[in-house]
Length: 128
Image (cartoon, rainbow, N blue to C red; front, top):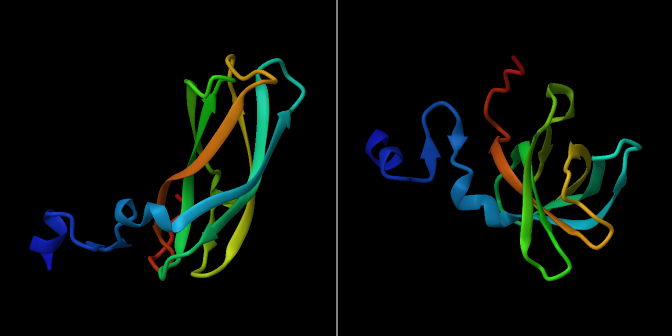
C-alpha cells in the first residue's frame, strides 16, 4: 500500500483518503459576503455540499477575489480555528462563515470560495 500512496494513490498513511483528488466533490454554494466593520475586514458565508462518497473535515478555505472584469486580484487562505472545523458527510451540506482581511475587495468584487484543505472525516482528529 505504501507504493500506491507514494505515487498519489487514493489513501495516505495514518490520515485516510487524500483530499486533492476529491476536491471536486465539495461544492461551495449559497454565498454571501459583507464587511465586519473594519476597513479591510470582511466575512463570507455559504454552504459546502459533499457530492462524493467520503466524509471530509474542512480545515482551510480559499477565497479568490475577482474584480468586475472577472480578473483575479487577491487570494486569501483562511485556516479554520480548532473549534470551527467541521465534517461534511457524503450527500450532506454544512454551513460556514469565515472572516478575512483584504485591501482589494470592493463593492464590485466577486469573491469565490473553495475548500483548500480537508482531511478524511474518519481519521483520528487531534486539534492540537
